[in-house]
Length: 100
Length: 167
Image: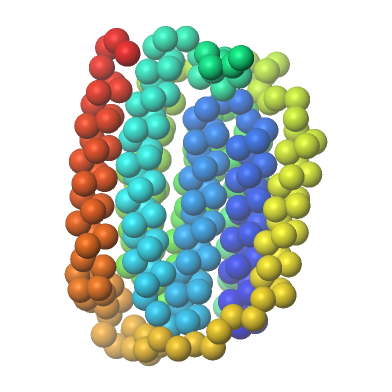
């Protein structure tokens, strides 16, 4: 298990860096990239445990996560472009239409 | 030797992940993120999952990041250095630090089950990773695989509708 701990620690560090990025940045494309970073950290955990437990189910899950990430990228970037056409900025602080 | 290689790759991965959240220009962030993806692909190879490494490079570093760089260049956002970050930087860093502590405690305190599955490293090397993944995916995971196609269809329709002129 000592061999696999390193991968899990790297995964935890990458996930935390992604969290900090999502909370601090204002550019919505950079926030999007930080979300991808967090998804990849989870993928690394999945593959590490899949290898450790000798079971391929985790890698199939990673495959599905990648599919969902691709769909999310297509729709999310279309949303960002639509937002830019309306507001001329992609700053998330400008998204306050529903703010009370 | 493998430990040294692992440490070098870890250093590159963490430094480029930090560059993703600190670079002012989104293009630099995207390039750093591609570097992180390549490091993760290296980890997958070290974990006896070469097919996943290939998919990581093709789908993430290829397709998704090309889409993002394309969007960044299409929008042509001017970098204004004054309003890059919100005021809650300290709060966010504390929260991220607690996330890290929490996950590390889970890693070191938990007791994982013993290896039970039939797929050992030798078996993966002898039969081939792609063949094992394919057999598993088209037998036990056939229904999720089919549902994924519906998800992709919905994503295509959504992207086309959202990219129209007037929303």
